[in-house]
Image (tube, rainbow, N blue to C red; front, top):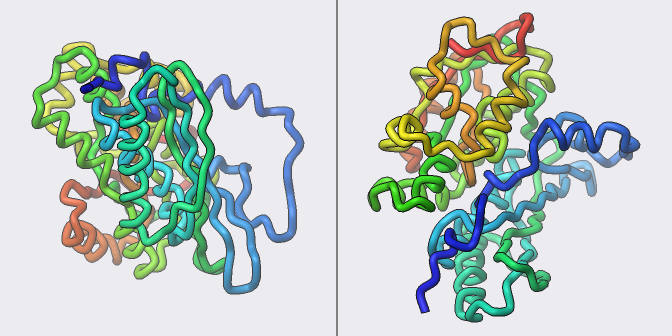
Length: 344
């Protein structure tokens, strides 16, 4: 039986994240967790936690899960796994193990559950990791993801709070997955555009992590549910700098701007823009549709990395050579100004 998983949900993928504004309020009074071996905690809202085991070995730990982001179960499993694994890569780590997290409706065929798990397992194998177990419960809609453990040398951790003035910003994947999935739910996107979005979401950030390690990059983040603007803001605040984004240089998936013009803007995009707007300088009169692209919630998005100016050209070429065809320079890091994020 063919079942379109997108027909079961209101919001899918990383568009289903809670509002960053409301989340910050809810967590504001929780006690700070510190430990001598906790090298990266929640202070800067980085992509994963890092815990030192010994002087040359630290664990990278993360989890991510969400409702369906595409119609097919196998595609869903692959995208959800790639998205969860990405946090390890954003920290400069390598994947070790993963645990499945799955909520599943008891009235759906178990063949769908099997295809979701199969898709996820194949991505973990591609990453060089192992599925070591998991947990399932019943739920009205499917929700799938993983708890992932990786490792990194403590001296080579990549964080979102080490960007420096003069660095060039490189983005490895185009934006627009949230918009395209919204249009797909309404049967308003062509198959080629939809498949392009799926392919980008399935693509691991593993090769990008290897290139960052080669060039000793120290600051990066992956672009997911809070959109390019939200994650750039976290990088700017953590690094105590301002980040300038050249809106016209930001790559987007084919036909995305036309879909935004038609009105296919997920609710997460509006929430993301609300979260960042007061801290962004839009004085260059950035068009509204461009703002919505920059705020679009990405699922399994690319890596935004801050690289030394003299290394940028070589890094850009190598990223394209290993398959990140839409990689582009999208801005630069500046001394701290009135607003953390500047859009030109």
